[in-house]
Amino acid sequence: MLKQKALRVFVFCFCIFLWIAVRFFLHESDLTKNVERAFPQQQLQDEKSGVNGQKSGALDGAPHGEKDLANLKANLKAKLKAEVEEMPKQSKSHIELKRSIDDLQRPIKNLRSIVHLDLKGAAPKVKYLEQIFPLFSSLGASAVLMEYEDMFPYDGNLTLLRSSFAYSVKDIMEIKRLATISNLEIIPLVQTFGHLEFVLKHDKYFDLREVAEFPNSLNPRIPSSLALLKDMLAQVMKLHPEAKHFHIGCDEVYGLGKAQDSKAISQEELGQLYLSHVTAVGMFMTETWPSVKLLIWDDMLRKISVNALKESGLPKLAAPVVWKYLPTLDFKAINGWLSKYQEAGFKHVWFASAFKGASGPDQMWTPFGTHLYNHLSWLDIVAYMSSYPDLTLEGLILTGWQRYEHFSVLCELLPVGIPSLAVCLQTLKHGSFNDKAKAEVHHILGCEVKLDKELCYGSGAFAGAELYHLVHRIHIDFQSSVDDFLQNRHLRGAYSRYHHKYSFGNPRNLGLFQHKLISTLKEWEAVIENLRSEMEAIFFPDTIEEWMEENVNQHMDMLRNMLQDVQRISQRKGRPKSQKA
Image (cartoon, rainbow, N blue to C red; front, side, top):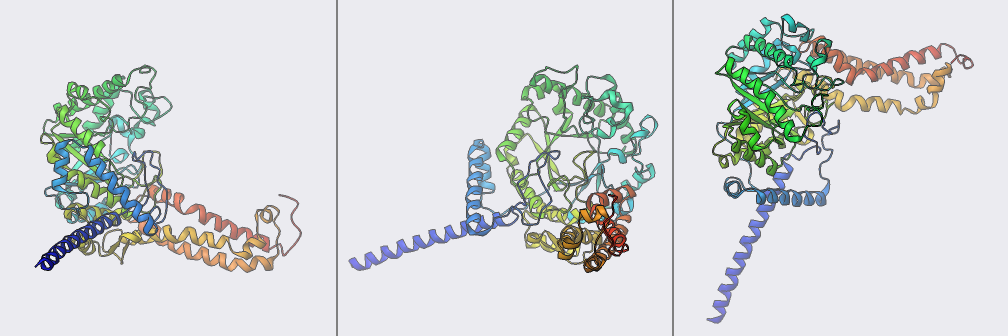
C-alpha cells in the first residue's frame, strides 16, 4: 500500500514537471518567433530629418548565431516587461489581458489605414496614380494623405511656389476622381510652420524665416506669415471643397524662438509661441470650413504642459498624429503622450508608422523587417487604447517619405516601397504577417515576399514591378560589379592615375583589361536604358535625372572616361610619357 501511494505521488510530480517543461518550451518558442519574425535591419534614430540609417544589406544588424539570438531574446523580454511594469495600473492590466509579451499579434477591427504620398520628391505622374489607387484599396487602405508641397498648382501671388512639373488643376480633379473610384478619401496636407523650405527658399519670402540663414521654419511673430498661409490653405481647399479631413503639418519646427525678436525666451514661452501660431491656423481653418477635421503632427506638443495645451484651445481644433518609425516603440513614452493628450482635452488621436523612407536619408532599397516590426509595435499600442476612454483612435497613417526635407536627396522610389506597403497593410489587417497575410500579398502583388531576403520574388503583377526589379539589380549588383572590375589585376598593373596624368602605357597591357571594361559598360548601359524607360512611364524628367545622378551616373561616367582614356593612350603606341601633365 505504501509503495503504491509513493508511486502515485511520483507519477503526479512527474506529470507536473512535464507540464511545466512543455509550458516553458512553448513560451521560449513563441518568444523566438516574435524576435525572428521581423528583426529590424538596424537601430535607427527616429526623427526623419536626423535618421542615422545607411544603405546596407538585408541582414545587417541581425543576430548571428545562437548566443546573439539568446541575448536578444533576453534583452527584448526584459525591456518589454520593464515597460509594462512602469505603465499606469489600468494600462498594465489591460495589456496583460489583451496581449501578453509573448502573444502573437491579433487583428484590430475597424482600424482605418491611410497611405501617405510625399510629393516633395519623385512625385508620380497621374497615370501611375490611376494604377496604384486600386492597389491601395485592395490592400486595405481607406484614404490617401497627399502631401502636395510644390506639386500643388498654386496660382496668383503664389505661382512661384510651384514646381516646374507641378500637377495642373485638371490633374487634381483627375486624382480626386480616381480616388473616388477606388473608395479612397483624399486628405490634403499643407505644412504651415516647419518644413516650409519650398516656400522660404524664394527671395520673396526670405523675411518670413525664423532664422535668416535657414529656410526651414516660418517666423510666427510676423503678421504676413499667417496671411501667406491663409492664401495657401484657401487655394488648396478651393480644389478640395469636399475634404473631410485636412492635415496642417507643424512638425519639426527647427529654429523656433531663434529669431532676433524671439531670443532668450524660456521653454514655456516657446511652447506658448508654438501654440499661438498653430491655434491661429486652426481657427482660420475651422471658421472658414467648419466641417473639416484637422490633423497635426504631435512631436512639438510632447514637451508642452497639459495646462498650456488646455488653455490654448488646440484640443478643440485639431487631433494630434503621434508618429514613430522605429522598429520597436517606446511604450512608456507613448503612454505618457497619450495620457497627456487625454488630460489636455483632445478627443481624437491618430497614429503614424512608416512603410518606406524612414530608414536612411539616401536609402535606395526598402528594408521589410524594419517597417514590418514598426507596424507590429504599433498594433501593441493600439491593443490597449481602451485605457484612454476619452480618446478615440481615428486611424493609422502609413507614411512613405520621399525626402527627409525639401533639400535632401531622394529616398526609395514609390514602386520600390510597394511590397513593403503591402506587407504593412496586410499586417494591420490580420494582426501579424501570418500565412493568410502572405497569401493575400502574393495574390495581389503577383510575387512572394521573402522577409529574410528583403525581396518580393517573382515577376510581379503590380504597377511598377519592372522598375522594382531593375532598381533591385542596381542595388545588389551594380556597385559590386564596378568594384570587381576595379580590382582586375591587369587594370591595377597597367593603368593608374599616374598613367592618366602623363598619357602613357603599354597598349598590350591595356588591352588585357579593355575588353572587360567594354563588356561591363555595355552590360550596365543596357540595364540603365531599360530602367530609364520604366522610370519615364512613372516619373517626371527631373526625378529621373536626380535619381540617376545620385545612384548611377558617377560610376558610369567613371567607366566611360576610363575607356576613352585607355583608347587614347593606346593610340600613342607605347611612346614615352608626355611632358605635359
